[in-house]
Image (cartoon, rainbow, N blue to C red; front, side, top):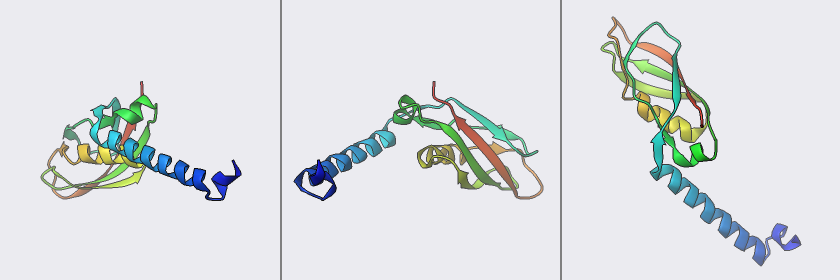
Length: 124
């Protein structure tokens, strides 16, 4: 057991195993999306005309990993989403939320606006 902490042969083997597991986990997250059960909360007065639900990565959902993702969304005058900035949340869930929000369409307005959007990924 002491050789695990001193970088002995068993420690290197354990590191390789953990690295392999991490790569497998990242692969599963990247290729295994499922539909998310989300609640969108738009903290602004500009109305979203069309929303797209983000995919909820299967590995996250089955592991009961969820949470709130906070986004700062720049909306053009014509209602298209120009940019999405992650304010907080799990990075894997934030990536999924960002991809979805980039497809949203808001009501037209006289000028560009910034919106704060919260998406709650709730595992079953």
